[in-house]
Length: 212
Length: 212
DNA sequence: AAATAAATTGAACGTTCATTCAATTTATTT
DNA sequence: AAATAAATTGAATGAACGTTCAATTTATTT
Image 1 (cartoon, each protein chain N blue to C red):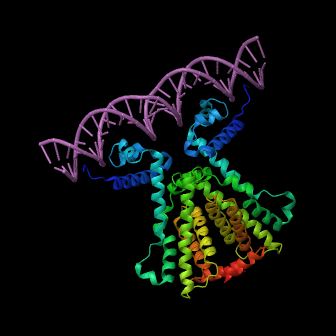
Image 2: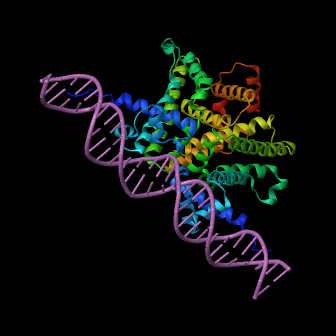
Image 3: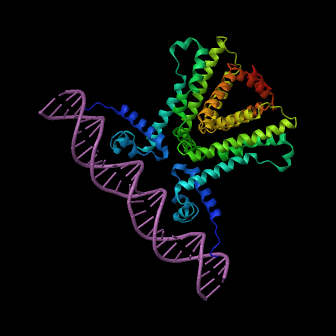
């Protein structure tokens, strides 16, 4: 009896507000008071749902890490077509949506916490390993169906995510839209190249380049 | 006349203390008061040399960015031997010293400021471009001397730094020392592979893998 | 020794912070 | 309608923050 609990939805609402605030002003400037003001609630209500600010930040990190897995979201129709699935995942990774969603200071600020917080470090490690593992599985599926013949799927999956993380590290600093677009396309091609998918002529030229 | 100014050395001293503090407690928890306490000076002396905390952070960023260029520091004797120089630079990048110097939360926290601060963004962009450019020049030297035949030095230089940044993004989360060492060696080999330098048998195996 | 200017201190300011606690409101059950 | 429990508020706390300003100390020059 008593009132129905809305704990989970309220927590989510608060985390989302906290995230929006952190995007605008930086994680280091995102406070409980400002978060509460953003959604017109009392600061002590935030404390009621997250006992400390620390646990609010943990909530934010889980929220962010969950979003990363969205890159594997592909139409159900692709489930029996691993090649389509693989290409869609790569599209997701190098899409404009993905950029604007994850090229932000909040991700890097949260990541930086891993250096001083063992729990955060483990969570991030698990995520990066999960991303690689999921990708590896798709490659293996492609191998089975004969649309790909990658000898070491785990190695290539790792290589591609290293490429992705390194690519965005640079891309996030590129202000010129033209340059951004060009670079993004180039990195995407390099990813496809690692799988021996490659469409454009320039990609083939680069393939020769890399193989000297 | 009057007293001799020690502005520059004092500023450097303060920045270094601020950096050490930020390494231990995180940039977001590094305050002027704590910095002053660390070197036994008055907090207002910090303000005297850096008018605002913001400019102290700018100083920190410049301090950090300068350190990155140290990877190009090689024995003067290598100046006429670009191959040795190139290999030494790669050694620097993948060395333990480099790791402990730059695998820290402060670097990522400072980097994250680029998303909200145009000046910081430009400084980082210039640094990353400088790293690539310097590396490219060494490759070109190697080409000239016939010890390398890289067709697109700029492209390869970019690829290698993307690899480096992506590699450390993952490596920074690896707690297991064995795994760290193994992965670091693997990424180093991948860098050498991009240049068609490759020593070990496993590297050659991977070369075949990548070229299918 | 007097003049000078930089180095340094120390007290004080208002602001924001996370967190506490008791009180009140609101929805649901009996 | 009474009981119940969660939702929410509001006031208050002490600590830390960045910054100010005037006063003092210290080293150098004339």
